[in-house]
Image 1: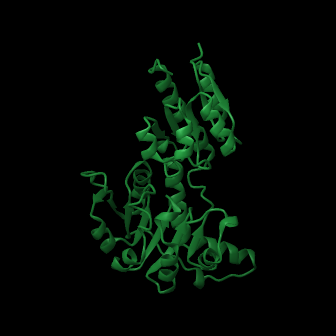
Image 2 (image 1 turned 180 degrees about the vertical axis):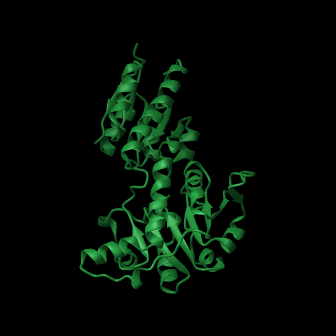
Image 3 (image 1 turned 90 degrees about the vertical axis):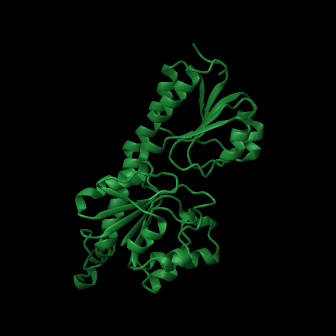
Length: 319
């Protein structure tokens, strides 16, 4: 039997999501192309739940219009496009599907790291142009290196697990977790990580604390040149500082699945300067925010959200 109110699905999700909600007798509107104006209208007209991904910014204007909204579900791990504090103050619960794409991001991290250290991207591009430069594309082995993971949540833990067969030392820092060290992962302070890491891999949410985490001061505090990987949020890294560090060899290489600005139509002249420096460097590997976006994660995200939604709707008689 259908519940009163409805669930607004305002982004693209695997068809299994709608199928499972329908099987549970839940009423929903699937509007994957919904504009902000449409979302605002639907929130004003009885939506009790909202499912989104990354394209929609949920700010105080939308939240204030959502008089019947009880929860917001985010299809992914980051929550930076939702004003979580404002939602909490209004009694609106917010949850995500963080575990659903951890495997995808972890594999993508290893792929980018190996491509960076073994110069696969530049070697491939040169061979396609008819160049056979063996010495210029000599790689560096991962074995024997110390990998520092910042942020040991679902994704950071999955990255650590996949590193175990590579003969590396894994150290990790997480401000919000303690006593997680074991025979495979050593828990360290951020200062110790800066002193020891040959490779730094970022897996933290974007927050006021993590914005510009990798800045000139962080880079200068690192004892040795390091390979840097950013597979969380672009604004965790001060890109201009990374470009300068690449030029002066304080950073050995930079792999990024995310950038400070994503969508070239938004770029200013200053943005184009740092982006051109990145794309013209032989020591970078870049991807268009696809780390967590695999065929498998698309399916898993739908099922994680469906489980959460069905549980909430079945245990709350007010919905």
